Image (cartoon, rainbow, N blue to C red; front, side, top):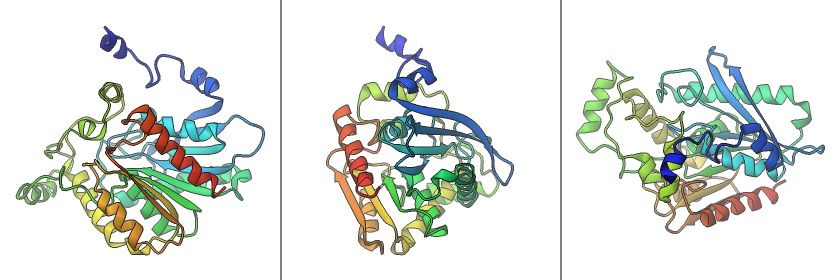
Length: 316
């Protein structure tokens, strides 16, 4: 009976209307569409403190592969907005409510340009934000995108929060030889084919069984097999990022679970060791999995949230 009731949920928090929920949380939120320079229509959201005083800082957030900003991802910006931070995010190409073939990302460089254009738009539309500290926040693939954004505009942000960043795809979820060689060949002719054999990422990411059910009810999440072109692009990008770790030079907080089998926590250690940054923090949570901010127990989620907020408080 409980599972049948869960299937009718309109939002990850239940059936409370969206704006009513935000009001109850003491924040403001807007939904809109942004047209990128390449004429893609991208869905965006904001989560803002419901106060008369300016926010303490601005956080631009990037979701992970197959995910979107309208379901469980927004639990984190809601929490941050309640604590005084203005948060903005968009569904990247082919994800959520944005334009594009579902889960097809042919070129991450174009995605970065989309996000930077959106950030520029937000800053020009909100001149009162100009002097506030600005941060990027990314989960999984979004973490790698944040590092690439920093490398492209190294002085734009005060810091980065990287949640299990996909600086390298774990060997535990990569297809085994000789499958990658076959996939590379076929991707030249049919990059949109969704045939890459991988483990169930929801099962590998989320620890709490009840939360797997809630995550599985996301109407915008992609649950199909990865597309050939997307996988090759992610492999290209993660190889590039792993080669550029020594060029990272901004304040950052990296959080990773020791039991993460989707992205490799050892690469987060490499990032910490190799980055030029003078202000860098790494936390590896014993026994936690990939979905640190939703898929863990509520107690574990609160630990991770507290660490993020403490890091931000020290820099704002």
